[in-house]
Image (tube, rainbow, N blue to C red; front, top):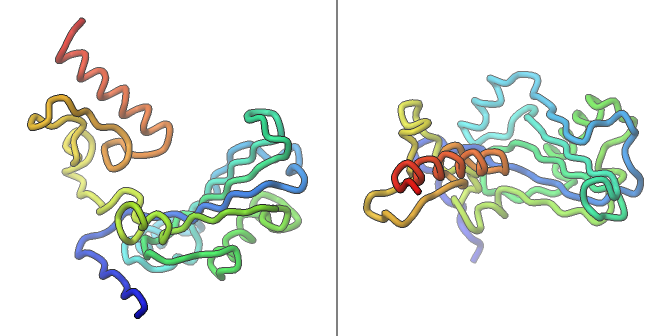
Length: 200
């Protein structure tokens, strides 16, 4: 019997992502930055689509290009393309119409003659179905979206819980969130609170 789709909760879910990683047959042109952010044509429309769990017309994307030997000891250039997507629990591939359309738009915006994925070998795609396998079932990267009054220091879960005084949290769904800069920022917040509570 096929698995039934998991019903979406009543509240709004945060976004998910489609992350495409691959090794490049040859490096991108020298004028392509190591890190690029490609914005959607209509940000408000993207927000509405993500809130509804619908496929957006276009999305925000991050492109990370690591040339061979410059940052990591890889022998060939590598590329990561991260597409903001709805938390729909779906499986995506390079041939999915949304993915293909966005890759073509991003590549054109970056001034490239061919889609970025055409030069990739050994690709891996991580999608909402993948993220949902070990977190929020629909793949929402930060769980349920929080109302404004629960942001910042009022965000749940908190950095510290009085019921578990030995436990301090950073990253994941703890403010300010995941990703290396956010986790480091969260660690700095938690450490400053910990030192204030227990001065040396």
